[in-house]
Length: 229
Image: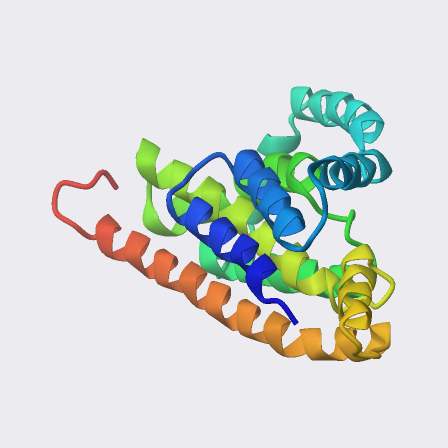
């Protein structure tokens, strides 16, 4: 068994740590992994092209964006802010922890498209998180507002990424099964899904802790002298 193809994983980690372009990092790592795995350059490029062609959702994006734009034009974000402002005890951290759990559970049930950045985070989750933060901690400056929005987007990513592998009929589980099968390990999709549960639970507590810690940092900064009330 050759372990050289695992260098591709190290390249992904290094590329993300250096904040390089994610598309270039993933594509470059895929090329290196394929070449070290014994494939030629042309078969690797063919595999990348086939994967892109089989999983493209460009037409779906063109349907979603006008709908979201129309809803925002008619005050969807403002209504989301007003709604969260009426909920007693709602904070930015608690709201995003709740959304994290919702995203993981729905993804685990196969409903991975029920959330997402264009249809959920931008028009609903991020404005509600901002409103909750302002309600409990006062006005936010530009850096804090961007951080809240980034946390909302990260929550969606983490919830989907670690939740979808629990659903045994997802493409990623079938891909993992195929890789193990080529190495002589006969595993069913259900077995792989079960072992994805501990990772999802750990991700929930780790990211949930980050969200609550960020909420506490906002509270401390709000109490600093000179901050606008």
